[in-house]
Amino acid sequence: MSNTLQRTRIGEIPLLQTVARRLGFDSLLRRYIKPHGNERYPAADTLLLLVFNIASGRRPLYELGRWTADLDGRLLGRKSSLSEEMFSDDRYGRALDKLFEVDRATLTTDCAVCVVRSAGCELDQLHNDSTTVKTTGRMPATSRTGLSFEYGHSKDHRPDLKQIVFNLTISADGAVPVHCKTYPGNRTDDTTHIETWRALCGIAGRRDFLYVADRKLCTSKQLSFIAGNGGRVVTIVPETWKEVKTFKESMRVSPKSRKRILRRPVANREGSFETFYSIGESMRP
Image (cartoon, rainbow, N blue to C red; front, top):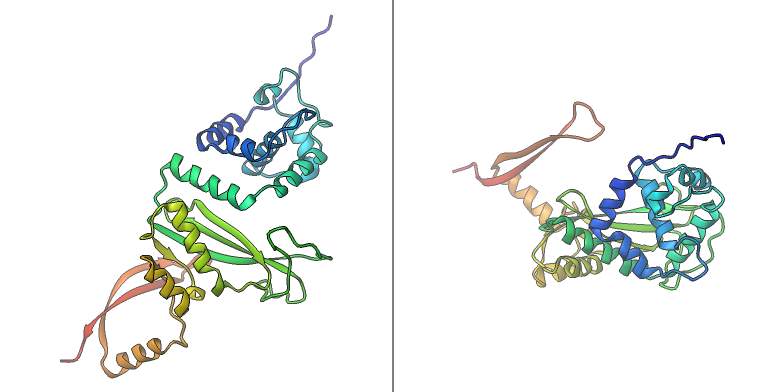
């Protein structure tokens, strides 16, 4: 009887499994994506493997079968080795289809709440930004929630392509994603902040956190709503506002002292710095 040697990989998977259990992410997926009786391996667990793959280097979809087959089957509670045929790209694709069918907005919110509670993230300061994601080809479909690819202001400078708007809010403590939502491509940034802020209030369980966003937040309607409901905001005032012109004129007529409060390097621009000042009392007697 000849002996054979089979090499399998363990790598970082036990660590990722521990993190997933601590955050409650594995049980969360299983709660939203129920197993079927004829499944050889539940779709929720397949999606968890996909997350592990992304966290450990991200292989393309067509290589996931080989990546999974290299793992030690005992990591997934199986006595035998894993097969590339069992974990083909079709299996991962079907699992993603099931994920598409669930209430993903509620799923991501529940996931954020689990992370905040289990990791003890501070939500005193939340930062929001959005970007556009373009697509090519025919995209006629509209999801059940009204999401669709539409023509809009393209940040990729491709107004000829349809797009969606991806809106993300992270915590200042560790840059942990707290809330995300996708909008049709013709949705403008200056109409999303009230909805986002209200969702963040539900996640944080409070209203007095500092909400930080770019100048698209600076509209009378949005600032009045957030401040009027006990919120706090940091944003950039556009040059077109009367208050900016009045302030600059007052500085010209009666210069005021200024104090440097922060100086830091500009990302991806070697030797460049940005400086922030606070403006004090008038320098003239």
